[in-house]
Image (cartoon, rainbow, N blue to C red):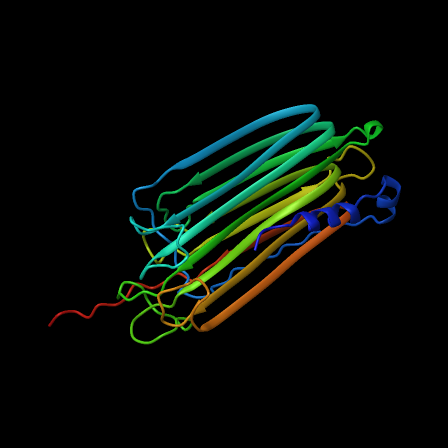
Length: 306
């Protein structure tokens, strides 16, 4: 499932298109902290980097009086098998795959904008506490009211994890693991998080961090999103942003019985869906964080030889 669809964005922007007078009548101060730390199953495990350990890094530091436009779309797919075929939807035994996507669409029109961006996508193996995907923004925007200035913002990231059931002894089982014997369950799932804004004044900071590539099955798959927006303190509104903002996180994961395919075949043994969405419009101060983390898998215990 993707982030905000075009229809949702259009509906949101239509919903929050109101003049300054109306927004002051609907003045809102909203501060929300939400944390979703979910250990769905130790069956959900990262893929690992083979020979391809490419990275992409971007930095932007911009000040603009007028119009600033930034567009970014990324998709990164990886399998742990040197001879794996991402075009084949049927997974091989013990195969795991990770798919990262990231997007940003920023249009700050007819106003003064101060914008910074740090972005990094690392396809190598990472340890717990490090990220494959990272992005951080700071955006200050003040509209030129005589020109009906507005800033439209849309950012989202997803991590999709797919894994065939394992027939080895190197992956531990948990209560969610299906099948018999010492094998781990097959799984598939997607977690997505992001935000949207339609504002005339804002000082915002957003952060994205995620990982799903590691040589160790004890490193959990993880996606975090942080959003903090308020006003610039330029008038009687004090520190309240003017306009509207939305922050969301959606999580969908399934585990299967002991089969070697995670493309929808087999018996579903666990199915988890979580939807979260917050919308503030008018005058607002909104701070929100989301986090998904799979349970770290324990390494198997080997009895000593006597």
